[in-house]
Length: 211
Image 1 (cartoon, rainbow, N blue to C red):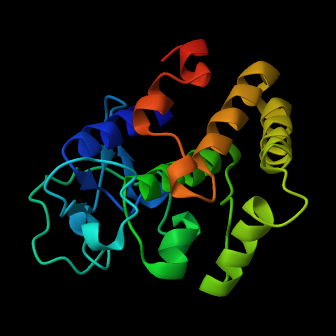
Image 2 (tube, rainbow, N blue to C red; image 1 turned 180 degrees about the horizontal axis):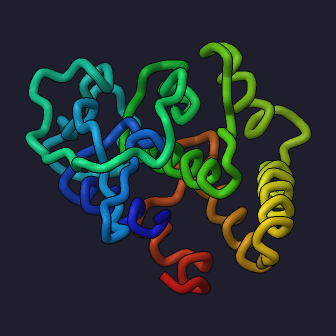
């Protein structure tokens, strides 16, 4: 599922489109197990005439993920969402969006990391009660000492893995470590330090697992 989502976002980014609302409630599976993205009302094309970059320039995108005047005419699947709608989209938004409304491809990478972490653990990674609380949770993870995102993610996935092992009888620590590294590379404070979808698709995690 994480592989399919990364491929979908790569496809959009290559066409200068930022999805801007990646979260479990917008992911759907059809009867064949193919992942579909729903709710394209928040997508936006880059306003830059050329070049991709990280997409962090506020002048390169419409100001809000729900305010651009011409939504992309993309089909919406008639399938059920993977998870029910969450109280707020803020749980999956990066700090640059919450603090200064700067959108871009790197924001999708952050949201991808939050979403994959939630699909792996069954719980939101940063369930902020407000925008201020959301930023505080992110800063504790990324920007305030002790700075240990690897340890934070490892603990989250270890707890989820132990619970899964109790019910399914299996848990792969090597795959878990690779997933932690992948998520850490997505969840970096500076948008320019985050990996791209191209990087994600050739990450050791995906190279080591059967797709």
